[in-house]
Image (tube, rainbow, N blue to C red; front, side, top):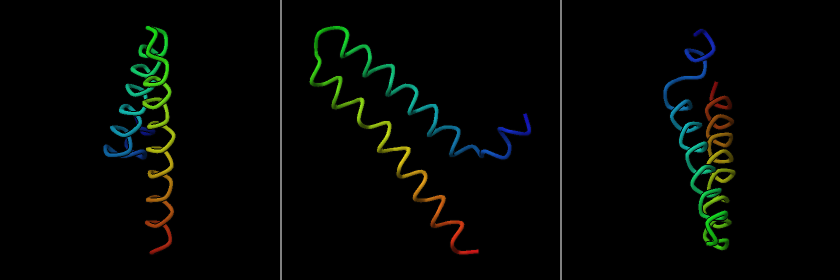
Length: 62
């Protein structure tokens, strides 16, 4: 439980959103809509990159 407190609610929700995006992308890709699956699948690493950037900006202000 300490890990989730340290992670924070916002970051936890963003990580859960990334997991949902990956599942939707897998579904689209495997159901035959491969281009949309790839497109949606690229959202997760983009979202993670934004999270990392915001964390770096927040740590730089200290």
